[in-house]
Image (cartoon, rainbow, N blue to C red; front, side):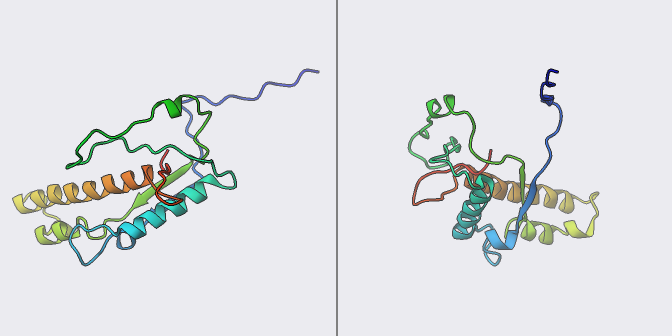
Length: 162
């Protein structure tokens, strides 16, 4: 009797989530300082996430994926796309979802404009929503950068977000 072929999952079928991790805003920012990231805590959280996502099979080197140019950078970022072409996989569990709080981003703007009280019909609250969104989005960009470029050993770049 022939064995049945393993069932293949459609790309449209959602994969099960293994873990949802929240990085607390107060843990990754300097809460008392407006829009200030706690670089050491964020770097440590990214390294721990990388370790958890890698499980027992830590790859020799995972490629960094922050290929964006930051304001003030003198040159375009180095992009090693050839390193990805021959990889069978990234060596990490991609069934993780990472979310984060706002910490020192967004709370000032929301508080000053009264967003927490409602009243979207007023210009101040509308402006407060915009200002809050801009602030929190800038934090989100830095968290994504840190996850895409997290460090595990010395100054080597390791990807945590895939």
